[in-house]
Length: 133
Image 1 (cartoon, rainbow, N blue to C red):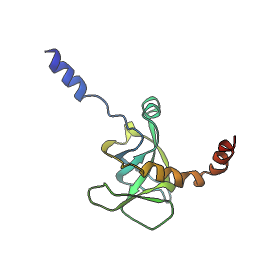
Image 2: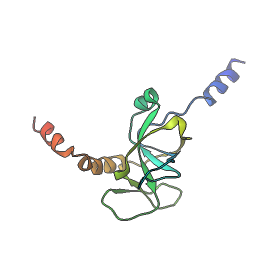
Image 3: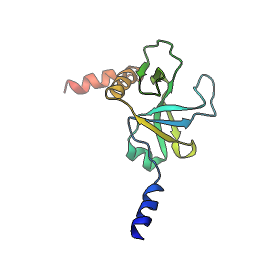
């Protein structure tokens, strides 16, 4: 009986998104040029932040490839060529947006994403100062 209760308890555990997970979630409603629909995204924030806040920080993933410097190829998406749109960082309530785990991004994807975000937010000067200490 205890085994059955443990199995039920484990199967009912709430999924908490983790950094480097590719998830699907609802990006609606949108405003202006924001990307919408129920779509995949790469989770940037930590599991601890996501659990404590009920939010996550992510970049949407799209099959519309424009060749922008802010796009990072992600090739393990059901044989569809896709890109992480690093210029469209969003903070969303994952509990309210039907989050679903898809896969973990391949090695190197997160590093490529962060390398594109750093100049977008002007952090390269801060990193250089920190490295000179």
